[in-house]
Length: 305
Image (tube, rainbow, N blue to C red; front, side, top):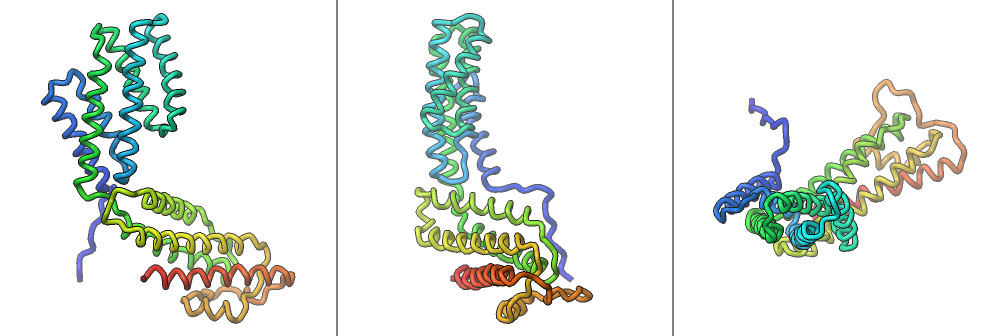
């Protein structure tokens, strides 16, 4: 007998490893240049470490711009303080959010830029160094560049094999749900399926957005995009079947195709294939069932190419 491979109770992905490495290198660089506040380098490294190289470049650009605005704004508020530091921080954060939103920055990037502004503002008031904000901006830039280098040099994100595997798993997960509804008369819970497909959609979106990884070809992305659309078609057809509140009988053709997939009524199940329903219910039911089975067949062929 072969021993089963034990699974960790948590997921330690490559992005987690690269984030930890980037933060460690950023802090090491901060101590090497004798930065007065090394955590700024860590903030930059964490903000720039994204799922793909393209996203990392975009976040690096936004972080640099947002933190520069935050540092300059903190210097301006220090020189022309409207009052108590708490009042200055509140007004400044509002200004920062407006500026970052006008530059179409992500909410996470806006939050980090506001953190940099608040840190620079409070430390400027205590240190009295007029160039403190620019030094902290320098630290953040170094951190973002280190994270960008780590993301580009250490196993750049491709995601294609993982996404392909997820598509196959989602396809297989839909067949038992179809069996429950059509052959056993139960309304399946589609919550987990929706969550799985939403995660898959995010993965495909990341692949579509990735332009810097040369190992990921346009043909690969187009292939996965086509598979994703067939999966959507299966999902929508399954939802349509589940929305019918009667129990129409599958056509002989559809029933034979389901049996070829190994989908059969369970032992001891009541015969629900002779249910009484309106004629139009049977037409709509078998239409959606045929759409589901056709999309499943096409996806099975396409995913193996």
